[in-house]
Image 1: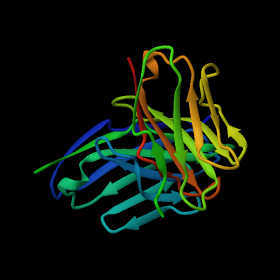
Image 2 (image 1 turned 45 degrees about the vertical axis):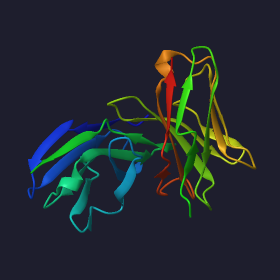
Image 3 (image 1 turned 90 degrees about the horizontal axis):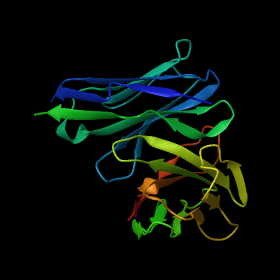
Image 4 (image 1 turned 180 degrees about the horizontal axis):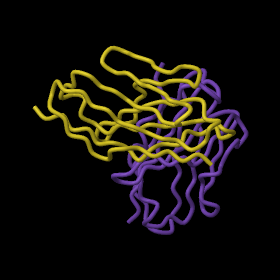
Amino acid sequence: GENVEQHPSTLSVQEGDSAVIKCTYSDSASNYFPWYKQELGKRPQLIIDIRSNVGEKKDQRIAVTLNKTAKHFSLHITETQPEDSAVYFCAARGGGADGLTFGKGTHLIIQP
Amino acid sequence: NAGVMQNPRHLVRRRGQEARLRCSPMKGHSHVYWYRQLPEEGLKFMVYLQKENIIDESGMPKERFSAEFPKEGPSILRIQQVVRGDSAAYFCASSPGGGKSEAFFGQGTRLTVV
C-alpha cells in the first residue's frame, strides 16, 4: 500500500518568514494530494490540495508543488502569522485505495 | 450545511465494554471514512464505506472492530470489549464521491478507556 513520509516533524520559524513542509509518497499511481491543518483539539481542516495533472497550485499565502517523477510534494507558507501555528498533515490517495494515507504531521511554531 | 457531525464528542468506557461512535456525513455525501488518531500522532485510515457497503477495511483491526453505513441513518464504528490501547480520537470524514473528491472531517470522538 501507500506510504507517506513527512518532514520535518517540528518546524519553528520567525513571524513573517516562510515555512516549507515536504512529503514523499511511494505509490506512483497516487493522484490526489491534500494538505490538512489541525489546531489543538480540533478537526483536521483541508487547506489546499493538488491533483496529479498539476505541478503547482497557489491560494494566497499557501502554495503546494508536486513532482510526480520524484514522488514528492511540498507545502509552502509565506509571510507566516501566529495563527498559522498548528499541526499540518500531508496525505495521498490513489493506486486502488480510496482512503487517504497521511504523513505523521509537522508541528509548525511561529515565533513572534 | 451542518458539516460532518460526530457524536458523542467524548466517550468514556471501562475495559471490556462496547463503544459505539456515530458519524453523519455532510448533506449530499455518500462516502464515509474513519480514521484513528493517537496522541501526538498522525491519522491512520481504518475503513471506507459507501451506503450499505464496506469498500476498503484494510486499516481496521481484524478483531473487535466493525463499521457499517446503513441505508438510513449515520455510519457507526463499533468497538467491542475495549482495551486501554483503544483510547484515541476517532475522526470521520465524508466526501461526495471516491477517487479525487475532497474529504471533510467531523469534530471527532475522543474515546477514553479506563
